[in-house]
Length: 182
Image 1 (cartoon, helix red, strand yellow):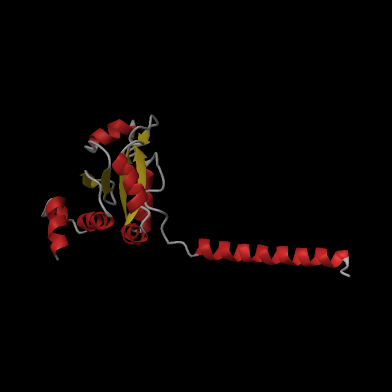
Image 2 (cartoon, helix red, strand yellow):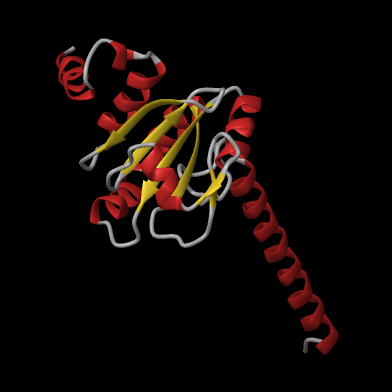
């Protein structure tokens, strides 16, 4: 016959063992995460601060301009921004944030001027979604892309295109076609 206290001791021991396994899993899972957070995972209100953070990190700033009901925006988030390869390769060179074009809240531009989101978009010539604005360390606009859905390889080409200043030689369309042939 088993003593009731022994059953309680066995249950407490099992509970402690499962708790240790849970904490071990938690530790391994969250400490082995990539160095950079998911691409464009943070919606921001101050682009000047983001430029400073990017510069301090040794990266450039890229802003994803989105609309809540934009099918290609949703597809980019689901299929491209969550890609481990995109996170690693793009995240190494760029600090990525997003701006909701439909937001009624003010947005501080890269010069520190507070404006409406639509005013900032107009100054940057953002004409639709999805759009990407790439900024130099001083906050000046380096390149703007507005267009179609980009798959992971095309998205990574866009990052290289800007990082290597290839926009001075070719349109992205030509660069994309040239680089896909090699």
